[in-house]
Image (cartoon, rainbow, N blue to C red; front, side):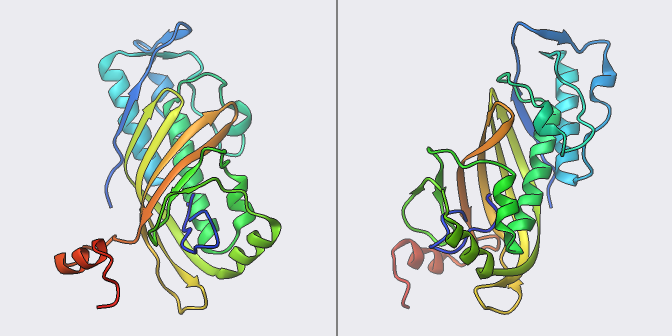
Length: 239
């Protein structure tokens, strides 16, 4: 998952319902989808959230008789997607499905302490912002040193995670995922427990790479009582 589960202050990084997708499309280099149903018949992934996003977006595009760039084709696998991703500004259904699968892999990597693999899946640009799940001010940028990577990898000893996408949005070269990282693991020396997080992830496509430009995470997967919410909002953490 990011970010996956960036829950420790020293590490500046930090899925129930079907995904629904909205998209803006256009451009001069287009291929009329009308009469070409085969373009959107096969989702490129087996991940449930990605497949649902693909299906919803494809059906919507077909209903509206939209025109998409002629580059829109199904990608046979995620591993080759980086080399095939267009340098254009539009994000296709297959791009979105691949992103969801990629972030599912990222979440699983982070919670089990494989931070180097996590960092290989996408980039943190200079304008990256994080609203961490433990609260506090907005953090900016993420460029961990080798020492910090090793420290975080030890902190997240083991675990399992999956990304459950509730909603997705696409506009130009930006994509947004609203999701729950459903995960458990051994973190910070604690016993294995649930570490699920609600997350909002904003991505920007830059040439052949995804950039995570914003992550907002919180642990309130389960509803809390109003009085507890009030104490937290008021900064009363001792009572």
